[in-house]
Length: 203
Image 1 (cartoon, one colour):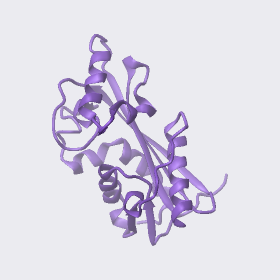
Image 2 (spheres, one colour; image 1 turned 90 degrees about the horizontal axis):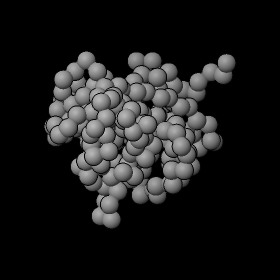
Image 3 (spheres, rainbow, N blue to C red; image 1 turned 90 degrees about the vertical axis):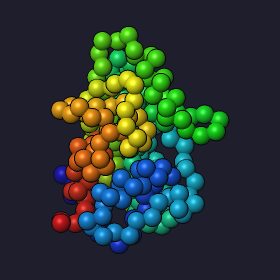
Image 4 (tube, rainbow, N blue to C red; image 1 turned 180 degrees about the vertical axis):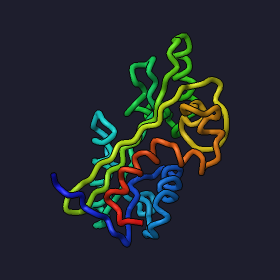
């Protein structure tokens, strides 16, 4: 079995232009003291996400940011899936929110409710793929999930994306109602990050 490559810093590019993801991932990486900069802050272009899996799209983004910056890069590709919609929106989570003037997640959540409102199955889950990439093309990938149910109407103003309509198993608050620290402890991103720790120095 090939040993994992360890990222020891000191500088890491977060391959995203999403400010919400930047905050969450930076918070998770804070104990290591890495210098973190986003692809958005560096003015790097966003590559086309042409894969049909979260890990595949995260790998595209991580490699593009790493090669453009000459630094190791970490990419996140995440999405919201609904059992009654055969896993949609899934890897098309962001596409469901696209409008001519930007992303509208209130509209996207309404689309989910309209399509699934009559289905008795309310199961839903968030998925998060994290991929570390180096300029030489080496990558390490990690997948995490958070399972629960979707609710309507949306509740809470914390988080971002579809958070206000998702209640994780074992809880009665949506991700949109939870304090950030509470969400971070149980989120799909936290689950993926727990696996990512195997490619970070011990703490």
